[in-house]
Image (cartoon, rainbow, N blue to C red; front, side):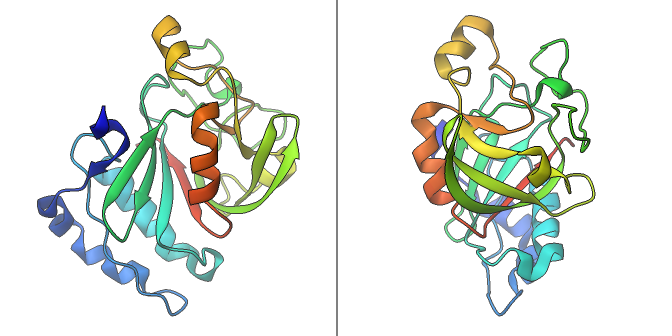
Length: 209
């Protein structure tokens, strides 16, 4: 079980992406090149895309010690949201939902992304985390979409929040978690950690590769 929530990235795979260290030289901040985890963290290609996006976004992402990566190629019953510490190479892996509009048949697999208001779908791309607030789902964190594929995130109300339908118990019963309306919904017991570690000014990258 420890490997699911605290996997350590290997030195061998660290060398494979060492060239990405230059991506951290943005806004006067040097960030250590990330080490790629083995089985329990983000896949190498997804991590490379996330790091390229972090570099491309420049000063719009002021905090660069930790990023969140949503691997929407993986089924929803797996711990497919990765909190990646770019300083020490550790990855914490959590359950996360995708939108109903991305999986109309509720198969547990994301079939499509959408940036359209009313689509109830997840959107691909980079987000920067904003402030916290209390809404219909309790404590939540606002997100701002930084790419053309998720530029409507704010107006659509795409945020981080917790939901009863995202939990190990739901996965045990149904083999998948429930669906949001496009938000990143987490297990209630994980929310405090997510909100604390993904504080304002950090990046979430969502994709399916």
